[in-house]
Image (cartoon, rainbow, N blue to C red; front, side):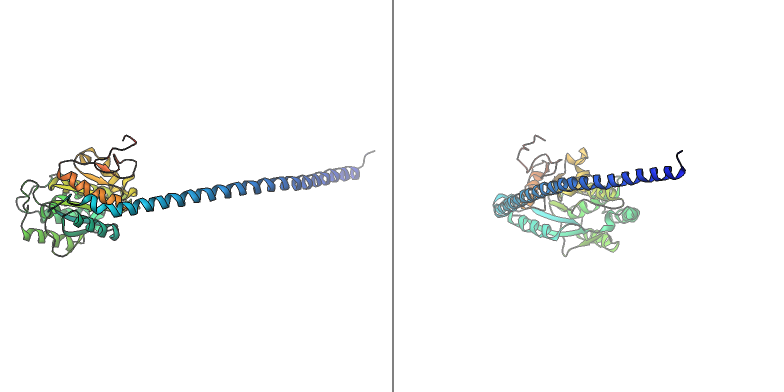
Length: 316
């Protein structure tokens, strides 16, 4: 007769055999697995090294191309804006290096920079929109016409356009010196702009912005800048909105402007102002604005061509 002890011993033996099998099996499996992982690691390391080499080669080619564009840029733009005038408007995230390089190139094109105005963070802050609207309405120059139902970006563009830009037909100021001082002073006191010394009206304007906006209400802030630049263009002889490729994507100011057909029909945009070629594009786009044209230039996917007068090889 089979006793209880026999059952217990049998079950224990089964479990012991199973445990030994698992140990032996896992040891063999681990060896094979580790060997395979080591091979894959070696292959991935080689792929990473190849990609890094390709990246370094591309960066070197880009640096060479940018250096070439920087060296020939002054010759390309020479005389393009002879005896013209440009006012430079920057957002708070615009890079000073881009601004300074643009100013030099504008001078080399034969034009004069008549002043600089920086838009602060409060300018595009949705929470400050009501305050900005009140300031703009109060500072409207006598005889000027503002959009009746415009957003704050458009209204601010109408105000600054009327004092910063010359009449596109007569090339004469659209407001008095006192009205210019009052507008810049009121916007400065409200914390919306920072104006440089001795700002004078100009024929053309550049709105220089930085990378794509991030954080809460990023799209609203970028839309304010895009609409502001568009209204500046309507007010004077021409405006170019310039930024980097990040600003041309999604909720960036350039991206929003390029998605608006009413803006692209008049406003020129350049998305690679962080490179020498983009700064040349910006000056050439100002010249195109004077001639009544507009376009989307640069390297982003929504650009229509690399530069004014150049056909996009992709056919966009």
